[in-house]
Length: 382
Image (cartoon, rainbow, N blue to C red; front, side):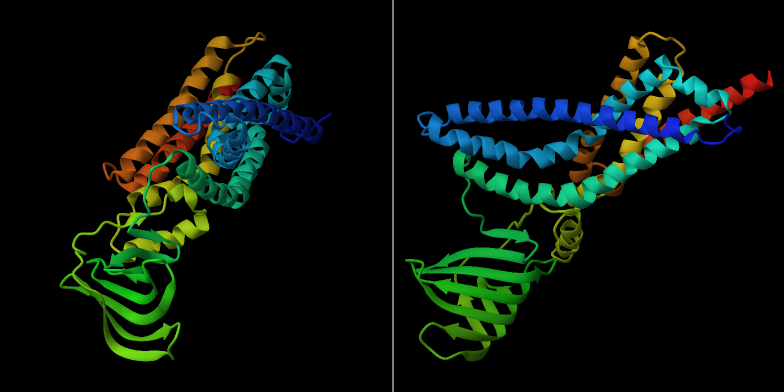
């Protein structure tokens, strides 16, 4: 016989395994459905694309590969909904099989019942951030390359910023330049730690230039304090060198890397680089905070589903309360994306856009669980 308020470890281990089993089942079902929906969508796009419609046999494996590349990002997105639906099924079975009645009858509060499950869900969320997120970012980049190859019409961007700094593609007369700078100032007229690769009109390498600084002045790029490495000549140092003349640099727009293409560790450094370069960081900051808050959002799904489902006293499947719980969960999930979009457009503070929906969901779940225990205490007093 269990002591009052002690943990029935065997029962709790079983309940945790039951919860994990339902999570895995729901996750696999979601994954299979979304995988085939994405694959069908890619085939539809390929069918509408001139030149691809007649290559169905050769492009089939490429489209399947693209769908596989998209899978880790898709897995990240469906995790909260998986937790929600898996938790609803678990708690309904708890009620139907009287597991919840057993643990409550020996004086265990709902908080103590949910803590082991919340810890498991939190660990799953951390694994998603530490393992799945970096894999997803790598696969997203590869997917974008293939998507552009098969469906896009994009030209190479003249100005782009990635984790290696600012990249500029320029053509001046019959020369091509690839310019890399560690960062650019907020006025976008001074480049620091500049590396230049120069080639002729046939893209044959001519020289490499290292310079401490590049100044954009009077529609020209002027390099200062550097050295030129030529294909046919010995290295030469210089104090000033006009690299590109008669080119309009005014008000150029820098294309930033998509936040989903960077893991959270690289994204944090990238945001600092964007800030130094005077680029709007709202979208990237909100996305970073949303990813970091994902484990808390997953716990919120457990708290909300448990507090609503376990209030029901019916032995049969509670269709109405399960539907309400699902609706609440879906509202939280989609409102979070809407607020994230508003944050990226600076309609809402990006910090609030990143953590706001998660914190509201978490505190709502905590309130519902605490109020449930409070009601039970009052019933016992009466």
